[in-house]
Amino acid sequence: MTQPNSEDPHKTDSLFICWTTVSTEEEGLAIANAFVGERIAACVQIDGPTTSIYNWDGERCSTTEFRLWLKILGSHLPQARTRIKELHPYETPQWIETEAEKVDEKYLIWVKEASNFLRFRKREPI
Image (cartoon, rainbow, N blue to C red):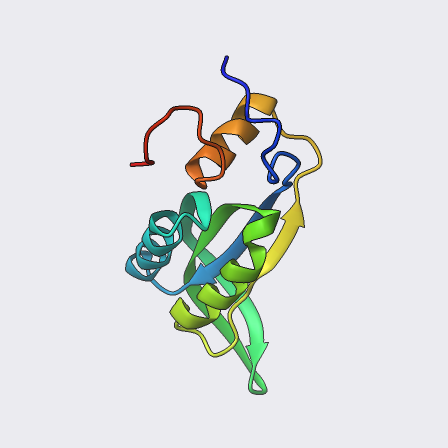
């Protein structure tokens, strides 16, 4: 296995799992493609449909939504927070971040590579 450059400042970057919900799968795909395409997230998974029940503007609501699970390095969180506000169709989008306590080393290396932090080969990322 190729080791990351020991001078890499992101070597100790933590993995965060973030999630949000949207009304349609198409909205989810648009956000997912933007986050992965811009290398803010290494991976986005979309679940759904699911039912959300909540109070909004004094009314009880029940809606069908799709959940996005985003794998993001801690150093990318500021950019992720900005982009979700720009891309999300909701007035007040759900945005929750949690730090992963235990992550398989190989998976974390892949996340860093997919997020364009580690260069294991002498070539530009795809």
